[in-house]
Image 1 (cartoon, rainbow, N blue to C red):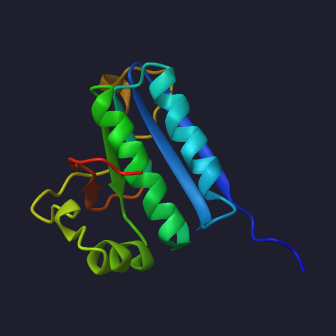
Image 2 (image 1 turned 45 degrees about the vertical axis):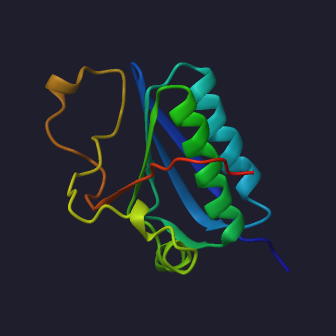
Length: 142
């Protein structure tokens, strides 16, 4: 039986990164997500936007990965934002009492595809737009 494909794409501009995840986030793929997000912080990224539009599934290991990354980002003075979460992640946030992480009053489009060109020369965003899920929390997640 073939394994489902999971991909991580990263595009940087200065101190901002757009991470696009595609496939299923589960026990097998969560370490890849964790590594990608940790690498952003090690590279001095201050704002990490995570596009979840192509994600078809996210289990509790994915949720734990995002909560851990958010804690690390907060400690580093950075921001982690989840965009267009799949229904499974939205449900997990609700079931675990983390629905406060879904700040529905904020409607912010995904940033344009980040490349080497300055933002002022970008003609229009190339990513789909959707409601972000800013991930902020306090407390210790282990």
